[in-house]
Image (cartoon, rainbow, N blue to C red; front, side, top):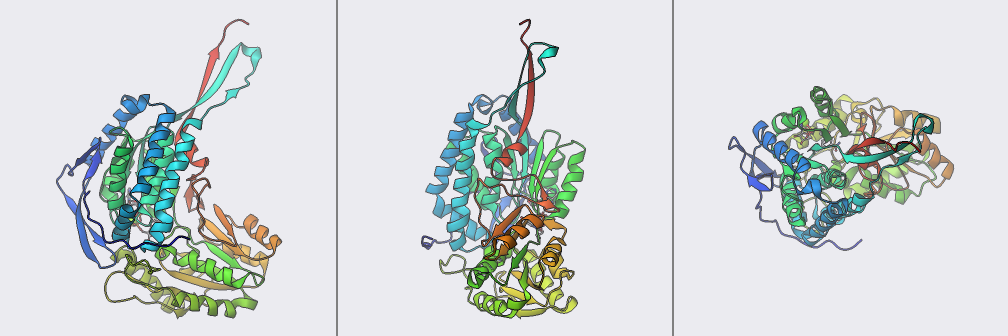
Length: 495
Ligand code: NAI
Ligand code: MG
């Protein structure tokens, strides 16, 4: 891994909505405050979009889809815009990283090594797809006539994309990449907690040559701006990442206009550590699994099943490693863990710590309290003595809090691993290939990691079973969610 370089807090320039290539105040003139999670202090006021702004943005996106230069642009040129955007992300990496640190509270170490490079690679990966999205020729029954039958892949249309605050830039890239490769137009609604980096990417997208109206960004709250997007008859598809309860509301509200929906939701992902595992590797994996990004990760390894015979030794090593994590100023390149994104999330995490200690009766072996006296930092927290039916083992905490559970038998651990409403990810640590495959086969989850955790690549599909969502992001699979298949029958006349 290359070294992390120091960056200073950035200047915040962009705070308006991006509609039809113009930076606009909200139609109603309102603004809302965005905060620095590391200090709890306000950073800037951002245009508060709502129904009227969504109306304008959808109008611009519709026009760009149907009659602007985008509608006539070749697939290869769409790809070139995406390649250019990837290059611009690389060229502006330091500035984007600084904005992301300021806005989200995550440490620069992670932003420089994960978020920013993955954003660039996501655009590059989908750039490559743009001119390779093809249809088929279909061997239809010739007894009916002399037909030539083929399929085309066409854009779904105007895509409403509603994203969360945990990976603000990367979630936008996962949504923009496949949508743009397929020729769609976009109205993005960033999370109200973290609007700043999406706006910076909007500026780069214009520089990259995406015509006005192809990418629109409306800031604001879920219940207003987000909801208007979900209900708008001019929006063909909603792609959403966030809480399953929000997805349920969105699915209901999108039903009247029968929109296509894809959902990437939460998790309570099981990690299984067998006694034969390389323990140090398993501890490192468990650390990444739960503490990466302050635990604000949909696929966080929040339920850690450890084989009984190594339980105590594992917990000792895990606790020691957790206590070595450096928390603090996320701009400091030596910081491992930054702040939770908001007061609300900070309160939620500490509420679950309290539930774990007092309602569930689990044992908190380390952490379990705030770090420092300003900002929204929570110490890495490990609970042992957890049963799978406890609330801390079943409900998504979305913070640096892990439940350790004991197991002694393969069939039982698979059963327990699956006893969750979620199905986003799972992991297994073992040297025994048979055990590894048994977990990979037996666990109902969209991603299974064997002797690793949180490895991502834009080419590898990502998404959930059960309440973790439907549809897949990344990989070829993502293109399916952003294209319609048109079947064309041509009567070639008499043979
Ligand atoms: P949320 O699901 O409410 O918010 C995500 C996005 O949806 C935001 O842009 C928000 O403005 C928008 N939204 C909210 N209500 C909406 C509505 N009625 N119509 C349209 N859009 C709407 O998540 P929130 O409240 O920020 O976090 C709550 C919990 O959700 C977290 O504690 C965590 O457990 C989970 N979560 C999961 C994420 C994941 O990646 N799977 C990401 C963020 C949160
Ligand atoms: Mg919410």
